[in-house]
Image 1 (cartoon, rainbow, N blue to C red):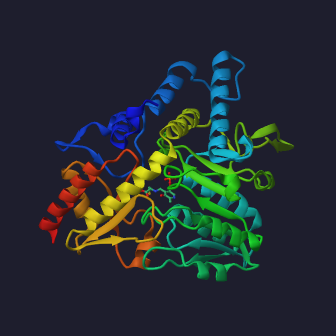
Image 2: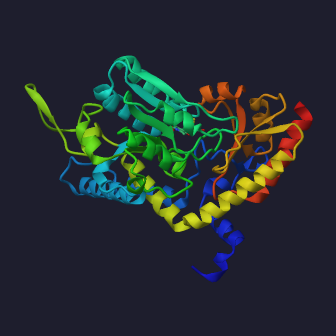
Length: 413
Ligand code: C6P
């Protein structure tokens, strides 16, 4: 890299140039996109990888002997190998393609819960989980007679680790917690959670939806049993995601859905299932999704986690300081270890009203309960306004946010 790009502001300018959607006006103002926890914008490299696949290689995978089908299959499986490498999986067999985090968790809840939960067993989740990491377990509990146990959170939005340890027992069959909270930004002590659970012989599923875009993940070093994430929050295509599972677990689990590609031989006398990872991938997959996510991972590797970490730390500190200075604004979620997310409320103003005013200034934030209703209930609020940052955001955008929030405060308070 040339020397001038070592300057953080020039690097930021260059990085922003990679994301075409950032360069537009909304309501007559330059777009300030601060809804990255909902979905991230896509760099040119991802858009190009997806469109080049459709332009030249589009075909079905694992089915045809013709050239295009071979090319599509090679690109699809090369993407799997690259994704496996990126997350530190020991083999591509441990990388199951899904529609996203939600489907990845549902797969484990259905296949693992369906075969291993019995009446009186317990599954531990936390109070800060996204609905995707609550409802599938409730459904698995309903089917099996198992019971959901919940790790409480503190007022500042951290897991109560002593309470977690006290919940672990011989009845516990699985611990399923989020790596990073989407509503509060809390980074959970996942190493500690995994080692405490493993001491009791209990496997751990981590919901990594909010972690992948912010930090490097090594599932083997973490020793996590299942790790789920979505491509679209990681600068890749929507409708695509990954379930990482340790090979010995995936080998033991029954298939999720039946159909093409997940079988070896089908006969009315009985069907034999395919090997990993295909056993869990019934039907034509999202081929462009895999290719796009793989390109997104290459892109993020090129940007580098040193830049990403420095940039996001700066944005979090700067935004926290600027917003805290506004009369009547209360930040929700003050964990010691936080990702670049600032959730807040403005007096008694409804978050939707604040979000609607911010949109008039070209600022995109998320408002509401963020699919974490139990957490909102615990905190005694209906929802929040959430500004979630990515490495391509700038301090100047936070200045715009502060200005618009001050205008909203003047109108609503
Ligand atoms: N959170 C947000 O604005 P899907 O929809 O399957 O890609 O991801 C679901 C999901 C699971 N876990 C966590 C921690 C998440 O943050 C999300 C998605 C978005 O916060 C949309 S609700």
